[in-house]
Length: 484
Image 1 (tube, rainbow, N blue to C red):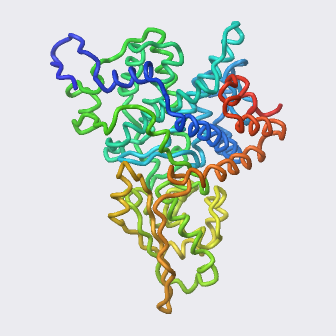
Image 2 (cartoon, helix red, strand yellow):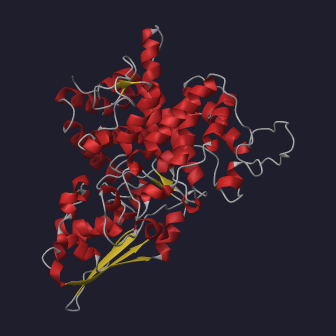
Image 3 (cartoon, rainbow, N blue to C red):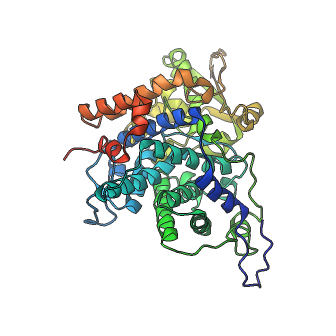
């Protein structure tokens, strides 16, 4: 941490966290086969989420040029569409698609977030660079390159999240998407370590967006495109840096004006471990339900109890939900729910729907389903409380559990069993069970939006990791392009 005298105009050495990010992005070699294997599934899953989002007009309206006509033939392809955009707007569009339904991968710690959000930047810049290289007679990037940058972006975002809580100072987790994406995009564009540090300093000087749109009474759809906005801003910082824009070496630590003093209560960042490939290896997949991840195991519990309660809904006296401290803090929500974004961040809603219907899909957050009076009736008899053991297991680096327990009590004095799930099917400890289900989710999403021939090619490539990794980015992205 710098102790620079703010009266002096002498430039200090760059803050160490920015140097560490640049060293990692530029120099670190990923040797973990598990990280690459997981990254491959993460890429397929993220683009499946993007295809699912194409069913929702509120998402689709964000995917074109920022103003009509501002297209870039030969530029970035936006999956599932015919749009070709500049890499800045392309990053926004792809980031918004992947994040829209809250169904992509998740990382939970002191800060939570969705590291695959960074693919908005990575795929946009990679497609732009690859298509340009081919036009100029050069070599395109490969899918393996995308996976490498994704592992590093996951590690930066997740590494910062382990011990540093941005939500507790009111900032949204997409500040870490912007950080990680800025770093890797600068390197992708040819930036050296100094330019990566310069770009990252601009990312920190941006400060962060408020979490206002994620919480009652202001929950709204911005939470679905906030990560895309972070991706867009990251590409701007990266482009500026490689074009010679100077950086701000003590952007974090300078007294009074730095990020620590302005936004982090004067505290420097803390780190649990050096950067490696830990985050990708341990990332959580949302496989079964498009639901905020702190509630995933609660939904599994509700699905288990559905057969026991579906014919006794009017006899229920009380429903007790035990969750982690973070679950209580961010998704325990009472009162009227105004929109989709309100509902998919309400643990009571996410439990009520599977208890009633035996399912939870993206469509279940719609106004039509929400109008069923049984949902609010069940919400009204729910008690949400923290289970301290769930909180301890949540933070334990050897567990990273996301436990929930559910029990239903009836008016006649009887009750169901207390159903407990420590970690969901998307957890590392359930990879063998989860990956076939993840690929089924992926195939269903692709077949619902893309031509059969393209889907068959994607799945055939996915079944052959060596072939998949060797594909050029431009060929890979073409498989996701919609027909005219």
